Image (cartoon, rainbow, N blue to C red; front, side, top):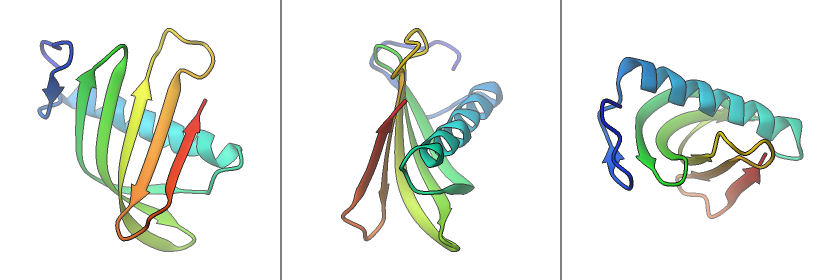
Length: 105
């Protein structure tokens, strides 16, 4: 992000910010599977935005593989880097599925 604005949503992430957002998503999916969450693997990032809100809120539209099935989903990651514990919250909602996956680590 060139000039982050508190509360503003950035739909034009720089190459470095996009890499950082995708790395955070992959790390969050790995942490989710280490706990009691499902095992999910990122297949494709279709879009990502970021918003500065007491940390950074990333919103992704992605394809994720679960149990050998690729599903389209929407992921939100609220990342507060200054918190050593419970600084990252992930929420995943798949298309045509009422269940929501949530975890904080």
